[in-house]
Length: 185
Image (cartoon, rainbow, N blue to C red; front, side, top):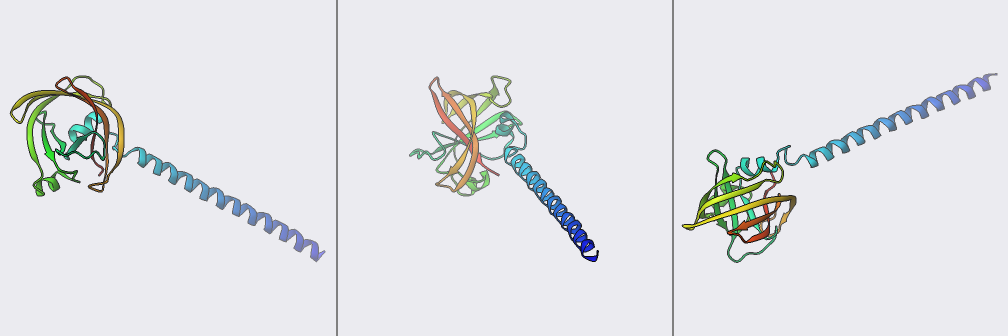
């Protein structure tokens, strides 16, 4: 009789132990799933829920426009600095991409081309069309920049991870596909 009680007790303990292991595994799996969901959310939330229109004009950094993220230009890169208070954008020519506007200023690599007034030609938050008009190097000019799709990558020369948009820049009625990026914060 004593042997049957021990077997029954051992069987009950084995069932309880297996049940505890199953519960622990479910809890661990749930934590991993929740961590994956929060990681995915933070990856998708890189722009902090701001629209393209807000990001372009509220960022205090330079926005670099070039043929591609790693395009090598002999004449420099166009760098745009927005001032949303007075709806102007100052365009500089720089030799490379900098992490911050302050770094470019400290390196004395901001060759000012001019300041333009900007307006939005449409109401789209994520695919805005920006019209700019003014003088660059004392020559009157106008350009329209149509924002298309998001883009990100690494600029090899400056070793910076950048994020931004594929755009079409129509400069004096000459449209050209470009990328418009800023260093990722």
